[in-house]
Amino acid sequence: MNTDHARFDTRAIHAGQAFDPTTGAVIPPIYQTSTYVQDGIGGLRGGYEYSRGGNPTRDALEAQLAALEGGAHGLSFASGLAAEDALLRTVLAPGDHVIIGNDVYGGTHRLIRRVFGAWDVRDTTVDTSDLDAVRAAIEPATGVLWIETPSNPLMKISDVAALAELGHEAGLVVVVDNTFASPALQQPLALGADVVVHSTTKYLGGHSDVVGGALVFAAGRDELHDRVKFTQFAAGAVSGPFDAFLTSRGIKTLGVRMQRHSQNALAIARRLEEHAAIEQVYYPGLESHPGHELAARQMSGFGGMLSIALAGGGEAARRFAESTTLFQLAESLGGVESLVNYPSEMTHASVRGTEAEVPESVVRLSVGIEDVDDLLADIDQTLDRL
Ligand SMILES: *Cc1c(COP(=O)(O)O)cnc(C)c1O
Image 1 (cartoon, rainbow, N blue to C red):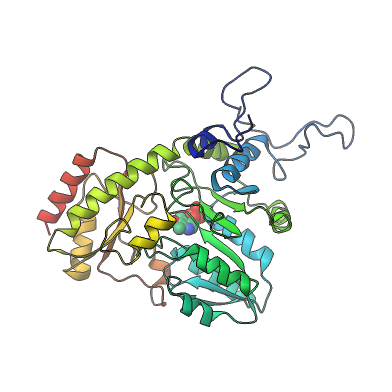
Image 2: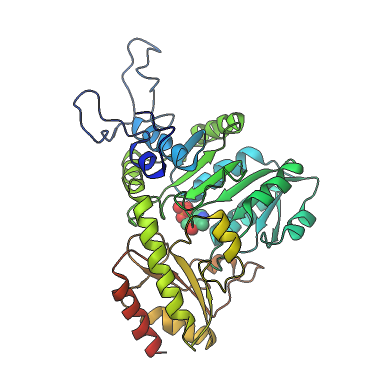
């Protein structure tokens, strides 16, 4: 089915997901195979040779990913960081420089600082919500501008359209990590970004049952896609067929899940904002959030992630994170179930002692799609115990 002109939820369900022509199976089969029989040497069927190079289940997911982000090409990887690594390895060389947000996912900071740093790639961390700071950080050797919005965990909002314009004036590859918003709420390629990155482990998969990553390339970036696809093939960090299938399955409900995540998170943000034990609530859906207006312009919803700073500091934050019951204490985010995380010692432990360090008073919530009254009751009982 050609879904090029269909709306988002239709594309999420149908792009790349044609029924099986042999049997009529509504769901395309999982091609759990490593290799493909050839009709004589070099006589490939449908171009398939070996599953590191291509697999129909992965291809189906890649078509779906491209359609979701309004891009020309998608690539599916073994994890979000594998996707980031393949992109950066393709576009950077020793001596190059990268600009990253000062509040990005800890693993992105660690990859760029420690793995690429060892290969003589330098980085500057800046507040990407400050255009002048980004402009001032650009050097002749800069190759990549890496944006994460909303950021993790402080939910800062950066202006993708303005940053893309700024980056392109300087000849940079402009990358947006769209994991937190998901394409249901934010479309960075339409705002001018060159490449979108996902940890599909989070909202796209949506059920905390698969680790995966993705890159989606804007129309007109075919050459960049071809080079990264070669890196993926040559270095090998592809997603397996079953992981690709689970991710495709999750994506089909992305639109309705993101609506519910956003509704639940807003209700919880408002409840937390009223309480004296909470010093600050970081949620772009609140009018009090400094990025609220920009988020309302650039996103079609505010998502399921929020963070709080506790007035009682680190001790109160730890107590909060260990007192919830429905919100389970775990790394990761974006699943149907609610999770609570203590960034400074969990997701962001790797950036302790760097400029990307997260304050000890901060707790991050991934608000799931359970009944909001049960979630609010859990928040209330937790606040009572502080
Ligand atoms: C989890 C995450 C990543 C890394 O993805 P993995 O699938 O864990 O490798 C990158 N960016 C953001 C915003 C994330 O939340």
